[in-house]
Amino acid sequence: MGNDGGSIPTRRELVKSAARNPTVSELKATALESLSHAWGHDPLTSESLDLESAVSDWRGRLYNYESILKALMPSDNGTTSSVPTNDEFPDLSIASAGIKSLRDVVKLKFKCYIPPGTREKEIWACPVSLRELGPSTKAVYLVPCGHVFADVAMKQIQEEACPECSEPFKSRDIIPILPTEKSDVERLTTRLNGLKAAGLTHSLKKDKGIGKKKRKAEEADREPAGEADKGKGVKPENEEGSKAPPKTNKSSRLSGINNALTASLTAKVLAEQDERNKRRKLAAAK
Image (tube, rainbow, N blue to C red; front, side, top):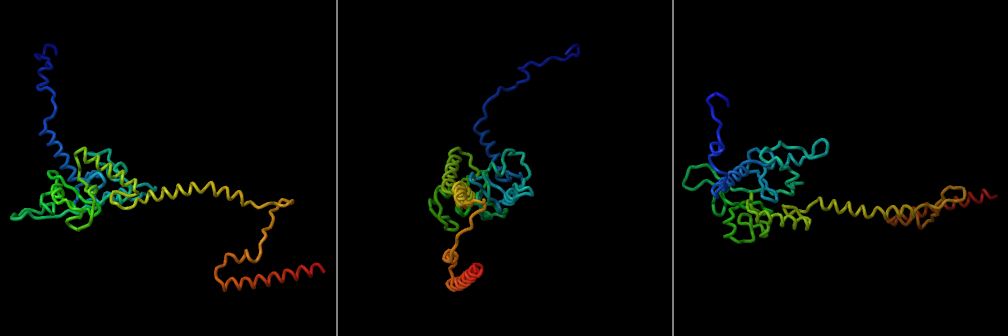
């Protein structure tokens, strides 16, 4: 800065190129890189994804079945246990993903193939088109069976039954894996809201949580009536302040007995008891 023979660089010398928007090819490369990571790693734990035991939620995200089990298992204090944090998705958790039970995920069924005429290793491929499944191929799976296919193959088939297991499905239950288009995400959100309104989960099974909420609401509605009945059931007190003894007869004591033989025996015992009580009263009067 002073008498050292140096010079102060100007902004023109520091900024070699002006700021610009990324090109289409750069955006595609970034999206492909993100998809490659999502196809190979669990978003909850950042561990390697095992497609043999992979599951998916309503939004098409892929998880290891083991990580979902660990996240749903209750801890010692009664809450769900924690899983190792993921630096890539710090905001994603089992709760934010909308997974409350195993009914909120579907077990995926991938098919392994060896490319014909080659000695290469096995690949995960579509059983219809034999296209390799991964970040470069748009893949979908069916609910509730979980079989995975290439999206192009399902559009060409246009059937209402799974090509692998022949289980029927609806068009709304074709779930894209790791969707990137906004229209796909909006369709999945609409589908989930419709299932919740019908009391179903992502796997088309009944939502047990809704049944519990309904039972609690019914119990809350019945509580005021129960308290009123308790007030009506207070027995009157006599002049001395003690509760009046209940008036019972033989018919009221036998009304709760359904068995005929038991009722006849009870009636006989009660008759003998009443006869003894009368004799005691007469003896006391004399």
